[in-house]
Length: 407
Image: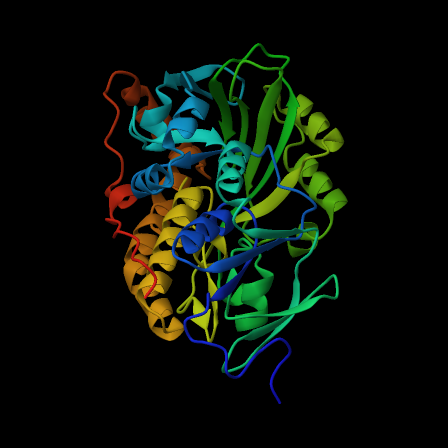
């Protein structure tokens, strides 16, 4: 019996139909390149609309070339957050050091970009919304693979057939779980939890970051511009992941409040603001590491396949580069099996190099012992009088091929 919507005598030269699950960063970026190569693309997103706001993200190295080829580099340069300083504080709120943000982030001044996540998402969406079908307020419920395609049932009840399905649905990917099993098999927990939210800028901060530390705990206030809003960040060391809290927002707030009880500086006010925040995002710091990113006609991209964690600062860059390389592999190889293999060959070393950055980032910014904290502070004081270090080679370790025409 032929599955729904599938014609056994369909022409092999017809446009291949691809479903992309997730309208974050990698999903719309992939949709753009696939459409350019002649694919018919549908993007499904469980949220009711494009998500705006969000913590600032970085676009560096190879990913900068991706956005240049997309034609959105000038707009991203206009949206670039030109932070002036990063001030590190002791437990009592006194200053340890005030340094150039590029020296801490490992970015290249004048080349790499830091933008609000919502600004990047909006630019990507604007590039494809007229050419790509978007299904908001829906998601993939189940899918069944056949030799000729993938039969997808959506939560809305609609059912459609696609040639290929791409999971671009983030670190906690439903697509990955359906295809390969529980997240725990692939999640490398890095020993930290964090809470991110916005709060009023009552401190007069402007284009700067203030980071308070005690061993195993950190609190940051980030003014991405000159407005009345701050991005607040509470991070803490937790030997085992708090699985119950991950499913319960009230438990998340209680856990953070308990961990930071008695903390100095502006932390009590931050905890109070967290209690009232309507945009609280709580999660563990972790990575996704998988032996394979595809099975049959379904493939993963971005955080769903290889989340590097915020500790590397490379999540968005990997998403952009991975989307480009997957699209190129599909445009170059008519056979999806060969395309997915080429995608993995082309990206896996780049992913591994960038995921490896986590071991330096976590130890530097969020030390868990008094000795490690003092070593970090000594390093920061030295940075004040030293030129900014060069960006890690991992950021630019991949040279992009030219997107091939559809065979």
